[in-house]
Image (tube, rainbow, N blue to C red; front, side, top):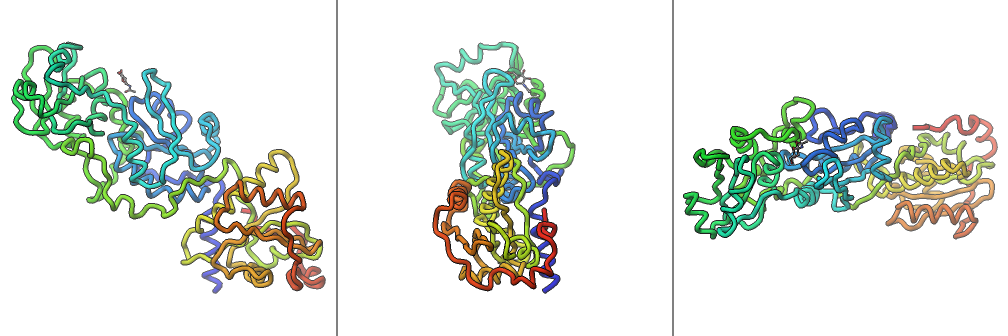
Length: 464
Ligand SMILES: *[C@@H]1O[C@H](CO)[C@@H](O)[C@H](O)[C@H]1NC(C)=O
């Protein structure tokens, strides 16, 4: 019992560190960006990026991590998948500037015609690798000309000083890989795509197979047919013989950036990107989603709201809220984890986050608000309280307010929604003395002699 209780406390503490390092390790395929390099890596890039603004203590951010890393692997070389730790003081300015109001906030940054002035959109889709990859791929600009028999010659005659890369294909749309290559070589090599039905062009270039990538050098040189693997790296190397790629070409590959660490090996299931697949080339396989957090609904915890304190022992619960003279307390009775190390269910993290935000808002305004505490299931006082109040056994999250001095308690009964708006409405009702109150049953608060032994209030809380 003792040791499993210890494990629970340890995992609870691990879930709520305040000033921890970022949640992505050095080996992560996610590009870690800070306020100093945001401009050069993201805002001034010709590539599309998705940027996660997060705080290490945020449960939804931790839940997102596996899906986000998977998305980064699948988008390697096509777009940047980046993260900014907003808990780091050095990044607070950037996070504020970007209008970040909760964690995680995901934004897709799309380069515009004006360098350094990208278009920034909130990503509000599902928090799965598949959904993220699809949304980002949709935002990769297309600099590949779709040429026909009618206009191919005219296009070939433009920008004479630049080599031309022409993809002959059966597809009508332009895949992410071609778009990413065109971005890498923007201003250096012009890209076009010609369909197989443009027979005059197909004959002119003597193409008999699809897809075929042909490079027409600037000037009078002979055309070169690419015959390597239809993957980004070898194609890039081939094209680099004719013109140098732009500075941020290498950085489109997050794992190759800044740190010259080897890339994580893509799982065999991670489908390689290939021009053969054209528009459909970035369909992550089903397995890409299997480990995604089941909770993919967008949910956020507030920025800069420190977590509410935890009452880890029956004694601390008693002295904080159950002494005869205790005033109003709000308690989050946390559910018993299904397994020793499992993360809190999202309803519980929502409840904690909502109360943290409400407490934080009041503190910022210098307004009084009653104390709010998390009570983990290992605190045996939690079970006693549940029994006494007739609440469900230990599998649910329960939010209650109680006032020993006045002898009432209230139950937050909207047990499907612990979002800030709903919880705040309930808290406001308590402050105004509105809403349903129940009489506190006998035996809930500690008797006088027990209180005499209890240490003075507030010194005992486990402030996390
Ligand atoms: C973006 O593209 C332009 C050409 O349009 C190029 O000159 C510039 O170097 C590219 N920027 C980066 C950061 O690679």
